[in-house]
Image 1 (cartoon, rainbow, N blue to C red):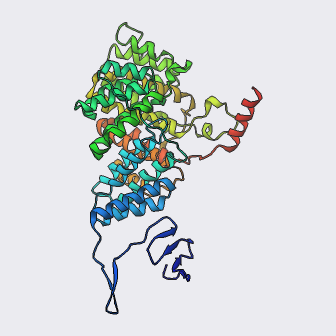
Image 2 (spheres, rainbow, N blue to C red; image 1 turned 90 degrees about the vertical axis):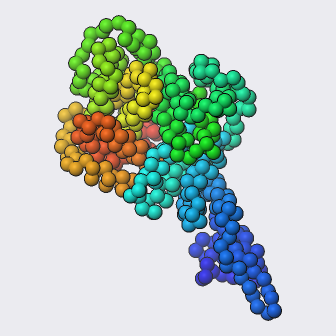
Image 3 (cartoon, one colour; image 1 turned 180 degrees about the horizontal axis):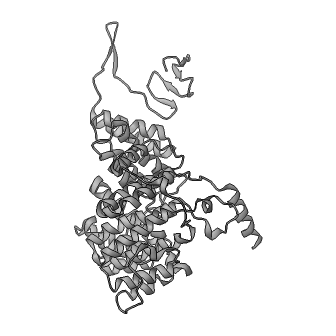
Length: 475
């Protein structure tokens, strides 16, 4: 700006960005930022400037207004600048995230997205004592940029104002009927009676697991939403829970597809009748379709405690991720039903971690959680290369691998938020699973190592063109 152009009307133009500022008022005429303004007066031929710091509360409100403008404009640099200003003001930089959640709450037509759920993991990295100031700022910038990206071009989707009288049974029924008005009313009733997000986790988990909903995202979103309410407080708890309930209402119910249709039957019959029982071994699930994996897990449920079954399922999920057949992800001549990618494989681990949290609060969720992990394993089994040489992905020093990988997240270089958030949540899920299942550390670290190093194709231009042409020809 010191090298800008000053016009006769006292308008200063930055020749790099073409931003324009009225120097008489300090107003920004063109551009995405505000100038700092200082009170000035002319007295006895002298110009007096008041250079004392602005009122912190007023300045905080100005910065948060700038965060909103950055969200609206999808201006990543401004979002990071405004968050840095909060830190410099010695305010809580996480206030930028609270502001973003409040701003986006009625802009997401289908409720919670990866941007919201991923915020919990990025905040874990922000809170790490070893994270540098730049890394902390990068973590918050990822949250804000992803929220803005998910809200791009969105409309306004207000929540119903009606209130009901809370009962768990009525809430579960409202979600099952996809009745947002009733479900949101019941949620608000629960909060008004003093129930906390932690109190609601069991029933929310039950609603999420009633179906293989949103390819497992429903339960992941439940657990991450509760984590966020812990970290960000009551100020945004209702907004986060409303987003979550909206997602549960609108989630796809893949267990109604032929591939997963045995889910309801297996869940209803859990522990009721003895079945032929294969060995409790991850290798017993290799190459098996979802129906077979669910049948095996159902049989195990009659003989083994859920914790042992869970251990085997995590091993099987990690083995699948380690043995991914990358050719399937990049081919252009595959069927529409075979459009799978790296992120599909990571969901088995992130879902398993969420299950681990949910069943601690509500052990009755074990059967549904185990059967849904089986769905992931069975669905992905057709896209692995069992004989792949994976020795190059082995990790000698797991602790150093985790630390180096976390450092790498802060400068991931991926051009899509959906990829960077999967890198983050999968790594942290793997770390949590390793802490609970030490014997699986070699398989989990090798699988994570392969995934974090993978080239993830951003767009499938030719494949999409061919598949859409074929669909149109069938019309």
